[in-house]
Amino acid sequence: MYKRFLKSVREYKTPTIISLVFITLEAVIEALIPFITAELVNKIKLGASIRTVGNVGLILLVLAMLSLACGAVAGFASAKASTGFAKNLRHDIFSNILKFSFGNVDKFSHTSLVTRMTTDVVNVQMSFMMLIRVAIRSPLMLIFSVVMAFIMGGKLAATFVVIIPVLALGLLAISKKAMPAFRRVFKKYDKLNESIEENVRAMRDVKGFAREEYEKKKFGEAAENIRMDFTKAERIVALNAPLMQICVYANSIFVLLFGSKLTITSQGALLDVGQISAMLTYGMQILMSLMMLSMIYVMLTMSAESIKRIYEVLEEKSLLTNPENPLTEITDGSIKFNDVSFKYSKKAKKNALSDINLDIKSGMTVGILGGTGSGKSSLVQLIPRLYDVCEGEVLVGGRDVREYDLDTLRNSVAMVLQKNMLFSGTIKENLRWGNDEATDEELIEACKMAQAHEFIESFPNKYDTFIEQGGTNVSGGQRQRLCIARALLKKPKILILDDSTSAVDTKTDALIRNEFKKFIPETTKLIIAQRVSSVSDADMIILLDNGMVKAVGTHEELLKTSEMYQEIYNQQSGGAENE
Image 1: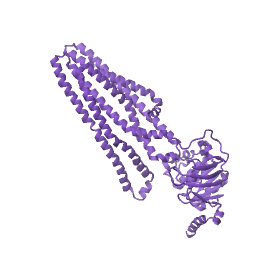
Image 2: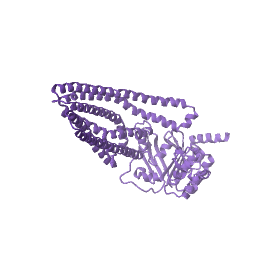
Image 3: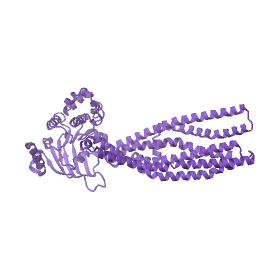
Image 4: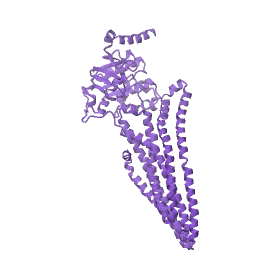
C-alpha cells in the first residue's frame, strides 16, 4: 500500500532527498553543540583565556548558523516535497475516478469521494512532511544524544535507561487510547459533507419548505459528534505534556543531585560542571525527541485511516473496460436488445430490467413511456455502456457494445438528461463540450435546432454570456435546451433525450422534434417522456412497466392494442379537454 503512495512522489524525489540530507546534518550539528559547550565550560573553569573563549564561541556561532541554515533548507524542501506529493496524489485519485463506471461511483458515494480528495489527502500530506522531516530528525537526535550523553556523563547517563522506556511506554499507551476516536472522526466527515452537499444543491427546496432550522439542527448534530470525538481524543493526547514534564524534571533532579554529588566527591575527576550542563541539555534533547516521535505516531495513526480510504480509490478498477482489440468505428445508429436483464448490484434481489427484446432501426424516432421506476433510464444507460448488462446483449451498429472502444461508443451516443449540468463558463464554452472544434456557425445552428438561439440572443452578451456553476442563472427550460444543443454538436449516431424537455412548453417541445426530423433524419432518436404528445409522432413507442416491455408499436397501434397506453392517453387528453 505504501509503495503505491510513493509513486505519487514522482518529480518531487529531489526535494524529498534534499530534506532528508539536511535534516541529518542538522541533527549531527545539534548533537555536537552541547559537547563543545561543555568543553568550553570546563576550559573557563580551568582559567581559559578570552581568546580561547572567543574562538570556541565563534565555532559555536558557526555551528548554530549552519544548523539554522540546514533547518531552513530542510523546511523549504520538505514543504515543496509534501505539497507536490499532495498535488500528485489528488491528480492520481481524480484521474482514477474519471475512469470509474457509475457502478464504481455508487459504491463509494459522491460525498465520500470528495472527502477522500480533500480532508484525507491533507492528513496524508501532513504525515508525509512529518515523515521526511521530524520522523528522520527525532530518531537521529535520540541516537546522537544518547551516545553523547554516555560519552559525557558515563554512569550518570544510566538515568536514561529508566526514563526513556517509561516515557516511551506512556506515550504509546496514550496514543493507542486516542486512536479509536480519531478513526471514528473520518467516517463522520462523510456524513457531514453529505449534509452540506444536500443543502447546497437543494437550497430552493430547503427555503421553499422553510426547513432551515431543521437542517441547521441536523448539521449541528453532525458537527457536534465530530467535536465530541476530537475532544475525547485531544484530552487523551493532552496527557503527553504532563508526562513529558514529569520525565524532564525527574531527569533534571537526578542529574543535578547525583551529578553534583559525584562532582564534589571526585573534585571534578569523574564528572565536571561542563558535563552536568551537557547532560541536562542532552536529557532535554532525548525527551523532546521521544515527544516528537509520539506526535508522529499519533499523526500517522490518524492518517492511517485516510491512507486506507485513499488507497481504496486508487486501487479501484473500473467495472467497465475496453476489450483487447476494440472496434473503433460504428457503422450506423441501429440498436438491438437481445434477452437483456440488468440489476444495479449483484446483491440486489430484483432486476431493474428483465427479458428486454427490442429492434430499433437506424434513424428511427423512438418514444419511451412508463411510470416512475419502470426502468426507462436504466434501459437507455445500457446503450452508451454506462452500465453493463447482467444477461443478454445490447447491439449498436450490429455489434455488442462491449466490443467497442468506450470513447468511440460514447462519442457516437449523446445523452441529454432531465437534470443535465452546465458548467461555470460562457455559453460558448459550455456548448463546445459537445465539440471542441465547433465553429460559431455550428453553435448557432445547433442552438436553433434546440430552440435556444432566440433566448441566447436576448442576453446582453449573447453567446459570451457567463453561466454560473450548475447553470443557476438560467431557467430550467433554457438549461435543458442548451444541453440539447451541446449534445447535437457531437453529431451523434444515437441521440437520447431522457425526459430532457420536461421543463419546456408543448409548443417548444414540438418545434424541437420537428427540427430533428428535418436536420438529423439519419440519427436514431430515443425520447423518454411523461407526455404522450411528446412521442405520439414517433416511429415506435415502447411502453415499460416494472422493468419489462409491456407494449411496442406506433401511437395508433397502441391505442388499439394496449389498455395501459389507452389509460395514459385518456388521462392526459382528458385533462387537456377539461382545462
